[in-house]
Length: 339
Ligand SMILES: [Zn+2]
Ligand SMILES: [Zn+2]
Image (cartoon, rainbow, N blue to C red; front, side):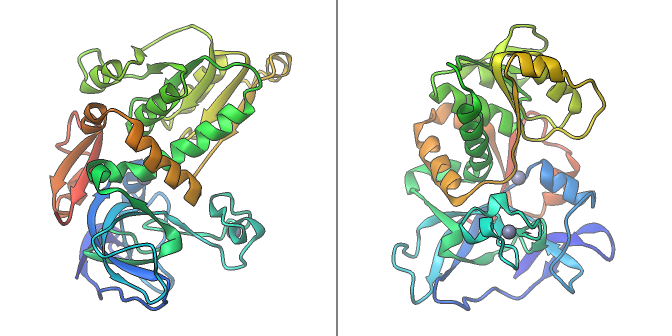
């Protein structure tokens, strides 16, 4: 079968003919990959900023956000049937494994030697077929098939929102989400389900489709603001946004970080102490957060979700998507491999 990924010898995105994966353990299933989502992580991988291929190989199949349709079951698989839709988790346990990985919280891996499909040392899903253990997959109801590709980004949001709400020790009512990418918008939608009033702050012009989408979903949009908020979520990658989030916190406020890179600025330690402020970083998610993501998807408005996903037929154009060409106005680009 054909796979699309990174050629580490040529340092380029490339197509390779690879062997079809086979079931080697009774708890595994084989699935046909229906869709692969593209995010900032893929773009950084394609610039060879981080990530590495499987040991001894010079090629890494891309695609960590995926939806599959089961075609074959291992002998011990009971709860899934051929034709069922699944969303795979990304991270696999470290070799130890460490206590967190052993306890099923690979997202909290303490050794740092975990592997991630399509990112660190394991092939991703941008190929016709894939095999995974049922323990690494979440089933998605057929009614949500059009949005199943959002389960993975939502899982990260679920984990951070859980942490942020737990850390906020008073009554959180107002939230600021920095960034109007897929993660920012999903975070806004998720916080709204919690009964929290959300403002999204980003760089998009008023005429941008993302702004209309945010407003239609019932959130405020601003390019600049001053109001204090109980919760700030940074989903931009920029250190400035993280400092903005911290500055905007009301007493007892919590700042959640999803993408900020390092930057230089003054940390207001004393202010943080006086006002009981908390800063939380979060990456990856557990199986439980993936399951919650499926539940959340079922509660969100279809019209909003439709606006989040732009589909491109086939994976041939993946290199162009990764280079960020020709998809203006798209919030999340999803490549379809099979109907
Ligand atoms: Zn991603
Ligand atoms: Zn571990």
